[in-house]
Amino acid sequence: MARAGFGRALAGAATAAAATVAARALVARRVPGGAERWERTNHRGEPVSMLEGPSVAAGLTAGAVTALDGRVGAAAVLATAGGAAFGVVDDLAEDTSRRTKGLRGHLGALAHGELTTGGLKVLGIGATAFVAACVRGSRGREGAGGRAFDIVVDTALVAGTANLLNLLDLRPGRALKAAAGASVLLAPLAPSTAAAAGPVLGSAAAAASRDLAERDMLGDGGANALGALVGVQATGLPRAARVAVLAGVVGLTVASERVSFSAVIDRTPALRALDRLGRRG
Image 1: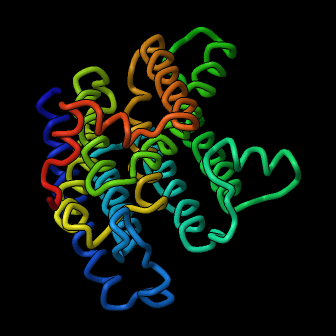
Image 2: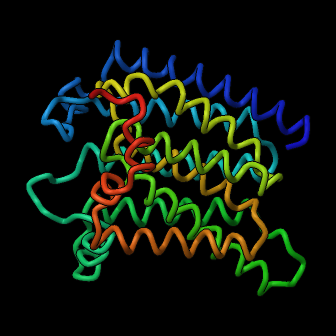
């Protein structure tokens, strides 16, 4: 990463961390709809707050404005805000008495003319990802066909990454670690979007203590926003690499319908050690 890019990333990290902490303190003083509306039960059967989600989304947005400029910055803000907004709608309005789960379940409901909150989230995040991809634009000069291909790939990459990160938000700190790790790996490979690593790392660091202590969780709003920004960062990769990453995202998403990520992580010593790092015993 060039010195200027590193400086923007550092500024974005500081802004994102500060905004995440400030937003969490603000919503704690005046909880929209009351604290109970944001409370869920975690894997231990204990209460946990989803207020982390909008707080992280606020931090990511503020950090993206600081770290990124031009088309990339606008795309990052659009994708992050879209992921947060439609994710929060699903968090708060989902009919928990029904068993419509997973991407396949929500798409199946849509195919039968039924719009679940999860289906609305799929459509909404897909639409905002498309707008973000159009704003981001093509990096090639191959004509209309090449530009259209870039937009399709970038749309799927942003929306798919937003969904995939949400699938990981099942244990304390897991989604935060995954987003931070992916962003660090992408930074040297995608120089034009490398500064996006700053907001991702800043917000993740600011939210980590409460998440790992099992007081907060990202929920769909936070996880979708975080994944969307990582997806925008991935749009800085060369075209072939973007297609390869998209194939991996699609493959993992399809696998999640049949395989438990938690079970795979628990069976793999290195992944299990990383997953439990910083968590309660």
